[in-house]
Length: 169
Length: 183
Image (cartoon, rainbow over all chains, first blue to last red; front, side, top):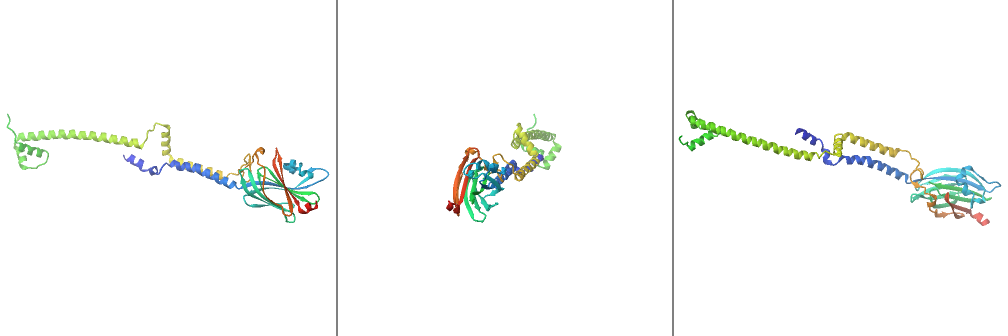
């Protein structure tokens, strides 16, 4: 009889419900929450590649081999007015939501802001581009699919061009 | 034929045998009357027999009652343990402290691993967050949309180029005003 009493007496947790529920909560919910936090943190970033290019017309076509990602495009209109393309600068930059990031250029400057991510596959960006005098050339907001390209072209004297290509993923 | 007994004196003898009276007259009678002593002895023997029988009955009833009570208690305490699940649960009950400690530790380690693991490139996804933007197949991509365009001191022209292999390219061509005027 005394054994029975002690068996029942040392188990007050039974009255509070199944202890396995707490274990399951710890093992399932905590990692799930951690994953959610990580997703939330990742939700507001994208990474964009910026290529600053100078363009002009010359006797012989020449395209920097570092411009291979856009080489095919540069050989087609409207870029075919030029046949020489030189990479001035290249920058890969993560963009945080609603935070304007400066994009240093060899000629002038630019800023890029991730406005939002649309439908999980598109980015809405605001790009500003200034010339070498600090005068704004363009202020544009566009929505593009990840992997697609935006190319800003600023016509310069002597039939030269200043190009800023960007793509985000 | 024996002399009829006195009912009153027999009653006194019974009371005396049961210890209910200490009458000195009854004691004196027993000293001198062998018949009274025989009656007392008979009464005591019958009393012992009756008492023994009743006690045996009581003991039997007691054991049966408590046995049934314990069976009911046991049934309520422990469910039938024939199944594997029941045996497993009993094992967990016995080692619940160890199991809970292990499970909580494993959960905590898993949570830390998820939080602290470096971002891994995910096929089809890219970026500092590494898991946010889906790069859709070219054929499924939507045409770029120009939400706003301001080209101070110049003219802006938007050209959309479609490429079956590389996706869309949107060209924003800014022609300075002085160049336009010159044309």
